[in-house]
Amino acid sequence: MMPDLGKYAEAVLSSYVLSILLVVALVAVSIRRARKMKNALEEVEKRGKSNG
Image (cartoon, rainbow, N blue to C red; front, side):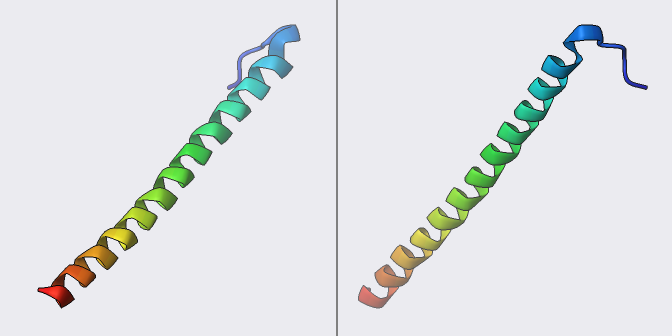
């Protein structure tokens, strides 16, 4: 299934692994930030309703 990468196998595979890890990290940071912003927005909306 995997092509023969020859002497470049280590470099290619490590690049793939690093790329996958970076994508996973970006997704995790995005999800975390979205949750944080959602909670902050809900707090602002809650304060706005209690004042109005």
